[in-house]
Image (cartoon, rainbow, N blue to C red; front, top):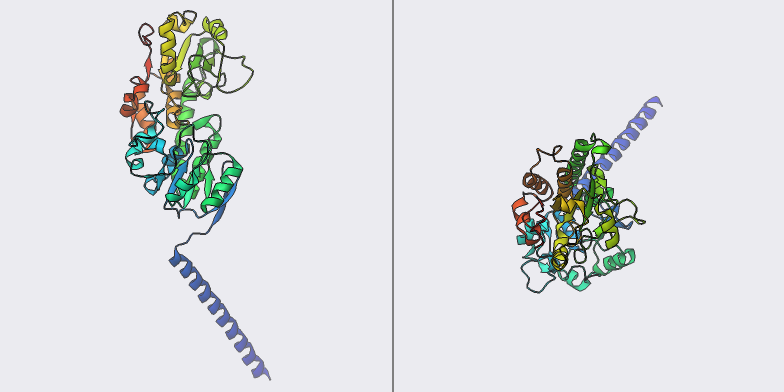
Length: 394
């Protein structure tokens, strides 16, 4: 009886080992099959307008970017060699396309213009293109679309129509310094298997921001001049009256803004009377190059328009690079923060050469130094400079 019991136990254990072995073989076979297929597991991500979209990270081979700023953002993280279409506004070889930004430096088109020029059209693009052109996008056969159209219903409808993921990005009111920008970069990193690249860029921006702030943090309040920034906002309508009292670069560089009592936040125009009233307190004026084309004819009609401005009378007027052209040039906005610090606190930034800094930043964002090409664009007026108020607008 005892021997039968032992035999039964041995048989049972043998069956268990056989089942385990079979199970392990099946699991190994399944894993081997999955590895051979090369198909990554789908994951659900939340895009920057709260839409949940299932994606296959690292699997995409045909990418289309639509809407103001989408291609620029993708260019910072993704492989431009995967692009299967481009908006007409970013294909500088096309004769028929929106040309309102042609004179201003858009670093991503300088860096990758040769790539963009060989791609099919996925739409016209530009400020007047307020909806995606689904038929043109479909003709580019994308397997994913990166968008900056921020209407949830329209993005859902486009995704259903295209049959591929549509991922919406955004940057937030503080642009390159906004948490939303870093989140958009991280989202691109996750989707395209470029997490390390996204982290590298975010760390670089944080380090640059900290350096600017540390250089100026110890400057006493009474030693800080009053600074007026103008020429902000829309490329087509901006002028010397377009300003902001919550300009992020001022906050980072510990710059005191002469404008303090606007009722609403953000970029906005002030009245001529307010500009004149503030003029006596303007120790330094910084003009964004986007405004030059609009200020020049006004000045030529009335060369007394800045007579009430202390900074103009004392020759303390500086030119920063235009950073809004088909939405924000994020690398330019970062470089501008360095220039603002240098213009307002020259001793604290005496070691900073703006051409070298421009090359450093554009190399990090876009893979190579672009200072020479940026400064050569017509609306860059030669680059960062102190304006000769006697002749600049003549």
